[in-house]
Image (tube, rainbow, N blue to C red; front, side, top):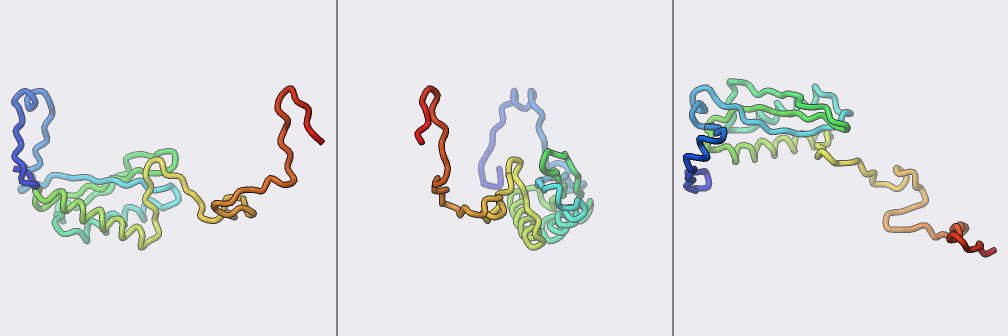
Length: 160
């Protein structure tokens, strides 16, 4: 029976042919690490990211204090660092709800400290036209085209 009260049947062929992770077997005794990840730009010091992630874990009920949560830098991308937070749940069956609360704490803390969580393909988009080097343009407006000449199509002479 799942957390959503669904009964799941797994055929023997599937169990025998694929890797199966049993989060409940050792979860009560030793704890099984559950991970979540965030991507943060290189402009944020890694020690600050590590501290915020560990603070979010401390604030989240349903997580074990032993073993302690761990933050690992999984990869260095072109524009960001991918951080993994490993935590142990007190009760494995509460996994979706505890992760939901943990994610909320992560977002709250990062927002409080002005640290932007990036998705892998996020690109910074300035809000003001001046920041884009287009001081005369305002969002939604277009240049008038006055004082500019378009090149004549190939084979035609330009009008004077």
